[in-house]
Picture 1 (tube, rainbow, N blue to C red):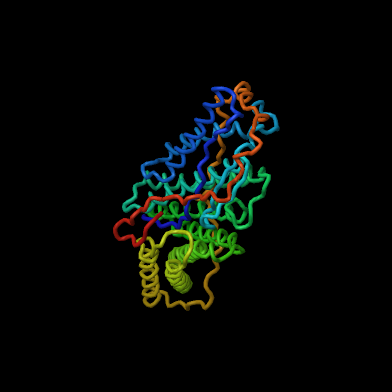
Picture 2 (cartoon, one colour):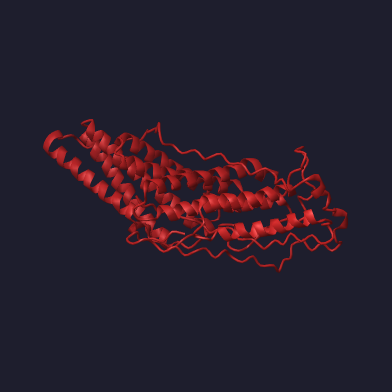
Length: 411
């Protein structure tokens, strides 16, 4: 089953040379700086390389992060931080706020920002794979796993590293709680979409499918709520997506709940459940149009033309017609005025983030190497201070054309 997911742009960053003239006093320290520069550049290249797969991404990320750890953690694993933590300035843009960068002279800020982009890459990789026609079972598992890995990275950053920043995240920026929560929950919700598609394919009971759809709709509602107090100018498009997916999966839940009711000979209630599915499907359809017209970060698409969307519309229509026919011939039950309460709990298939941890400090960092960084020799006029005129260029992300008949493009 083909899926469609909204994606915000990648974070962009200013180049970092890791040139510490005067401070570096030996070849081992010089080699670490060169390796940091090249491994950072390599990782940034892979973010937009369509041939990159999760194994390549993990290797490149581990290579850079293990070297960067020497700028953050002390080598004796005491609680003391590295003497190099504040030596280099880093600049990063945000996924929602255009090309206005934040700058911090703190290696922890770099670890978090680059980690955030790695998590975004996993979600974009999943999105590209999920948008394919005739997705295989192995590819569906890869989508599912990539979304859980992305959620795990976001969660790890939120719980273990963002609290260590000396300068707290500014309101509306990627590293503040509302945004990072929305990213975590969206990853979980989208992974559950894959679970639902699999459950339908394997013809699991309508009761289980309805419960999974209901839990997924709740996830989308929770993610939307996390963003509700953000400035609409840059959050409106993302929120339209979350709201339309909430309506879409609520329609799914009512549709399959109606099938469960029909199987229990509750045809009148089944019809009412399907009518509610129709109502939420119509809401989702209206939100699709609004999403396409809303300016803001994210792809310009027409989700209502997408195969995953049209399939549900047909299913709701056909199931409702079947219930109405059977009620007219067999049951003659009164249709309730109130929609049935969805108090559904899925016992299987709920998605949890995959636990994540950064790699340990590279073996290239030794006490001798660290001693080759002499901070007393830093120039008085410190060139690592931020230069206001420096511009951070946006990331040129690959233009992924839509598959035939999907009616959308996926970034």
